[in-house]
Image (cartoon, rainbow, N blue to C red):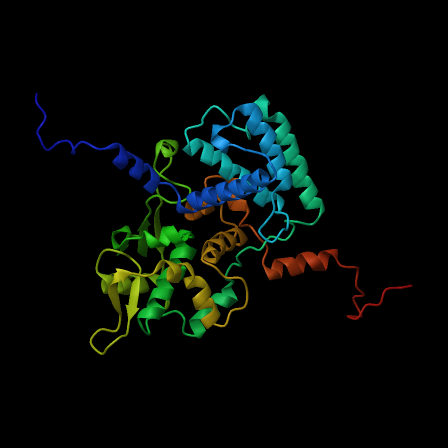
Length: 368
């Protein structure tokens, strides 16, 4: 039976195939790969000025690649001349490996323990990373702070959340998209669509439902065939029933892109949004903006919402698998990086480990 003429699409070109592959690559991954290659090429130029003609990495044979990579990890520095922290150095090497893959070099993997051709390079990299750590580099990791219950209450009390105007309503749904559904990255928020949310009620109660698409940990490709996209129902009630805020926001935007520029409210229309999407930089700094305006002190980024989600669930004793379903983590190792103790927990631990105190004297003085 002959297929109808409209069954298949038009003939695709090599350029269209290449564009599709590039579009589906993670933006941060591409940026990091480009940065790693840039560092390597700057080092190549420096070496060339000193009489060493070094060919491009992807054109090297295994022996040549092993030789020059050893010297690169020993000699490379930041632009200010300081050495890289150990993990940063490793990530640069990972970026170089991705670059080789992008250039269709698939027979050389200098990070593969089974590839004996690069065994010496890996020993050099391992030793260099240990040396950097011994110098104190990379020992202080600056992480996004979770928003505590007290901080969250402060945001409500200071008018950052609610339905007062278009901006406060948008702050509300943005924050709870992070906290309730584990959204984190700029791209996860930027690509959101009205159709991914719905509100309703069933036998359990009122809910807002989020249907996820692809994200950092779920691309939907060959590697994710055994995984499912997020499909989360969050039930809510009470005076701050979050379903009410989602219903109001979804009605205000109507359809299409989820985050749009808030417009000044008028008497007839309290919540108004433009047709164009919220700017990338604006969206990237939305959590920090609302926290600063709300009077919070700390390192708050868009990552704070997802960390808040995981931290709150861990502290409430929720099963780890349930936490991973909310946050989208694919491994327990990944989600456990979010498992941090709050100030109260740290205080209890400190009290247990402090010197013994005199029960009858709060100002215990140690015997000499």
